[in-house]
Length: 465
Ligand SMILES: Nc1nc2c(ncn2[C@@H]2O[C@H](COP(=O)(O)OP(=O)(O)OP(=O)(O)O)[C@@H](O)[C@H]2O)c(=O)[nH]1
Ligand SMILES: [Mg+2]
Image 1: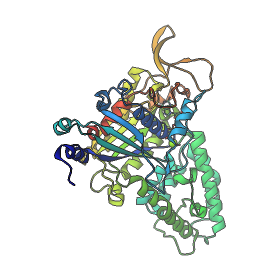
Image 2 (image 1 turned 135 degrees about the horizontal axis):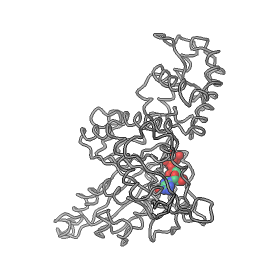
Image 3 (image 1 turned 45 degrees about the vertical axis):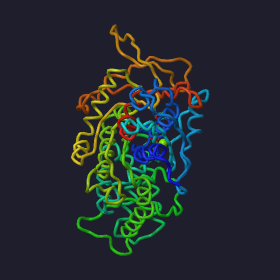
Image 4 (image 1 turned 45 degrees about the horizontal axis):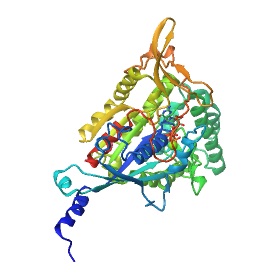
C-alpha cells in the first residue's frame, strides 16, 4: 500500500540528503594518521548534544547531529580499525599512544543529522552521512609513484640519492656488494636476496639514524602481510647509460621482481585505498622535519611532493585514471600543533600553506577546494609563558611521556617559509613526546584538540548541510 504523502516526505528528504563520503587520510609514517582517525571518531561519537567540543563544525554547533554510531564492517577483505582498543589505550592510566600501523584498516561511522534545507525543515526529515575512513602504514604511500616509473628510472633516481649527503655513508655495504655483482652479471636469486637485505638495512639506517623519509619501496620497511616474501627480494641497480636489462642478467631478475611487486602488491593496495575517494586530508609532521635538520626537511618535502605529484588532481590524475577517485576537497594539515604556542601555530599554518603551493594550484585548477591548516588531533599541552634570559617567551606546558612533572617547553620560532641556509645552524630543540590528556573511554566529553572541528567542517560540512 502506498504511504500517505505526509509520511513519504521525510523518507524522500532522507534519499535526497543521505550520502557516503570516503575520506583518504594521507600521510607519511608517524605523521599522525591513526591518532587523527581515533580523535575524529571519538569526538564525533561524543558530538551529540555536546557542541562545546566542536564549535566550528557547524552541524554540531547547531545541534543538528542527532545520533552517531560506528557502522558495521562492510568489507570482508579489510580489517576494522580498532576504535575501542585505540580509545581504551588513550584512556588508560597512564595513557598510551597507538602503535605504528602495520596493515590496512577501515573505520565506518554513521551520522544521523537534521538537514538545513527548507523542505527538510518543514518535513522534519533526517538524513544520514556514512563516513568511510582508511588507515594504513605511512610508508606504503611511497609506493604510489612507483606505479608510474620503470625499474631503470626508479633505480637511477634512488641511486643518485644514495650517493649523496647523509645517505652515502649508510649505503656503502650495499653499494660495494652491487659493485661485485653488476647489472649484467648472471641473474642469481640468492645474490638478489642478499642485495635486497643489504638495501633494506640501508633504508632502516636512513630512517632511524637520519630521519629521512623518501625511502622506497615502502614495504621494505613495513611489509604487512605478504603471501610470497620473495616478491620483495630486489633492489635498485646501476645501469650503464643506454643499456637494457639483458635476459638472464641480474638486472632482468631485479626488474621482473620490481614489476611483479607493483602488480601484485602496490596496485591492489591503492585500488582499495583510492577507489571512490572524494575527500582527502594530507597530514604532514612539519615540526619533526624542522627539528631533524636541513636534509631531513628537504627529504620529507621531496617525499610528499613525489606522492602528491602521483595524486595529481583533475582529469589526468593518476588516481582517477587508475582507480576512479574524484577528490573535490583537499586539506593539508601540519600535525602535532600543540607542540607550539598560539602565535607559532599561525606560523605553522603559513609554512604548511607555503610548502604545498604547487599542489594547491594544481588542485584548484582541477576545481577542487583546497586549504592548509595547523592541527593537533589530541591536544596534550596548554599555552603559557616563561622567562628565558630575562625575556618573556610563549611556551607550551605539558607532561612528557613517562615523566612525573609538567614542563614548560619553548620550541623556538617556526619560520613562515621554508628556512634559508643559515637557519639550520640553530636547530629546534628536540620535541618531547607529550602524554595525552585524560579522556573518558566512552563518549562523554570527547578529546581535546586544536582545529579538528574546522578540519571536519571543511571536509564534511557540505554533506552535513
Ligand atoms: N602532542 C601530539 N602528539 C601527536 C599528535 N598526533 C600524533 N602524535 C604523536 O605522533 C605519534 C605518531 O602518530 P600516529 O597517528 O601513530 O602516526 P601514523 O601516521 O598513524 O604512523 P604510521 O602508523 O607509522 O603510518 C603518536 O604516537 C604521538 O606521539 C597530536 O595531535 N599531538
Ligand atoms: Mg598509524
